[in-house]
Image (cartoon, rainbow, N blue to C red; front, side, top):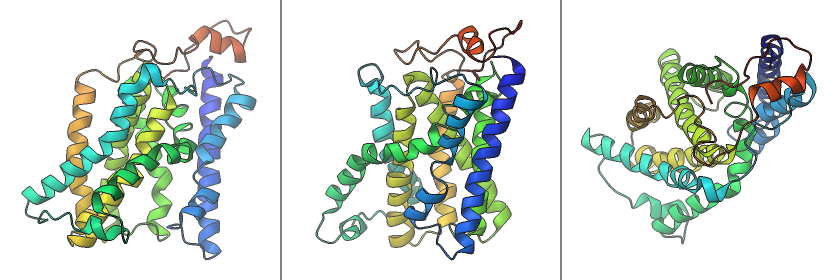
Length: 307
């Protein structure tokens, strides 16, 4: 893909992703709709990155979906599905454990028994994990845009830089939510800083899953687990029952997540061309993708950003 085509595609993707999402957020707020409501989120912002990626792939760069990682690939990618499915529970345990060590929380799981009347706590947790695959397609609305499209096209050949850039952009995309009632910070600047770090760390994990599995569905499953398991259980155990401030919970949660990301980066698991080496998706070669959008170009460059 020529530099001009790649750059134009990224620019249009960002314009659409931010324009549609921010427009939807502020419109919903102006109409008195709560962005805490999942239905409002689905109707206004959840699928805007995927929509932007489809528009760019089909009409702007015309590169198609050869490297979008749409195949499920359960047989070859099952270890990464397992990591995506159980990882959020591990992060809950690590976050709660660290909170206990720091004296912020007294270990008590009884709040889980009260989450849904008549449902024991252990079953409630099992049902949350079981719901993750069902909700993964909803979170693909973001992953098809950020991880499967954008990350592959910023900073070609520099996988860590590409992941950091994508994580930062993804964080900024969420910023209006901090001013529209979705999340509240006592200190907005500090809150946004920690929130940004959290998004950046999450993108490192999502990129690792995507690169090594070759399918966007591992990242979508992990994204579902982040919202449905890690965030929800942290809120029930630490904030609602334990009385720990939301911001403190988020800050404590970044510690085990940062440790995991350190292992991923330092062990080279974000290095270029890992996709396809572990049985994942075989991405179209740079020349093939370039030819699809610029068959007469004399010079082609990879549209991948360190995959």
